[in-house]
Each structure stands twice: as C-alpha cells, then as structure tokens.
Image (cartoon, rainbow, N blue to C red; front, side):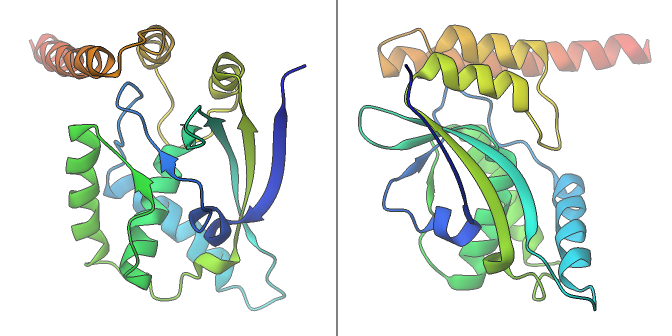
Length: 200
C-alpha cells in the first residue's frame, strides 16, 4: 500500500521545513499575475481584519511528492505557495524557500516581487494561515491528486496535464528540461496565433 501523509500545519511551518520545496522545470511554470495575487491578498486581508474572533485563514490543500533526494516537489498548489513565499521573503528578509529552474517562473517571480513592493500587505499575518499538505512518495499517485484537487486561481488546461504526465516519464533531467522549455515556447507561439485568428 502506498504511503500517504496528510498533515494540517501553519504556512510558516511549511516554509520552515528542513526539506527543500522544489518546482521541477517540467511542470507548469509560475504564471500568476497581479490580478490573481490581489484577489488572494484581499481574501486573506478581509479574513484577518474581521473584528470578531478570527480563526485561521485556510489556504486549501497542497500536494507534494517526496522524491529520492528527500526534497518535496510541489505537484499542486505552487501558484499560491509561490505568491505567499514572495511575500514571506519581503516581510522576513529570509532566504527564498522554494527552488525554481524554469525561466518563465523566475521572470514572473521578479515581476511579482516588484508588484508586492507597491501594494499594502503589512496587515497580512502569514503565521495565521493554515494549510493541509498531502505528501505522496509515489509520483503517479501524486499526479492523480494533482488532476483531482487543482484548487488554484488559474485552472489547468488539458495541455498542462498532458505535459506533466508525459515529461515526467523522461528519465534524464537535462533532456526533460529541454523538452519542457520547447513545450512552453511552442505553446506561447500557438496562443499568439490563436489571438490573431480571433481578431481576424
């Protein structure tokens, strides 16, 4: 029977875990824009500023795959986690707690870091955010959760799921990353063509 660990913990405790949180390059990159960020921040801020007794803000479920290096690969929830990790980085001046290699993710993290510097987030208390983590050692099972739970702001398309499903079967990391990058570039080109066709 496959080992599955389900744990409820504070977001800060997840960021402070000794195990490294990782976003592999073959997964969908970090794509949240200020629109999704502002929506999440508004929800947290409204919840935490209520005058009645304040329960913890529940961020939802995060699916993690524990790989052979004992790192925790974020299978589902990376958009929310990355956004709040940027906020944590600004608030605490600590090291950025999630490893990324995808160039699109790195670009968007820098852009959204700049966005955070221009919004009011001082009242948001990351120590009062609760999250449920599902840690799965079997990668196939982790992706079953990934396809089922997907609770983030931008829903996954069929091509996102196909990409994750097929690229994770490539053993060599360098080759996997190369195909992941090519996939993203081709998808951007296809989206640009579709926009032109719609305007025509």
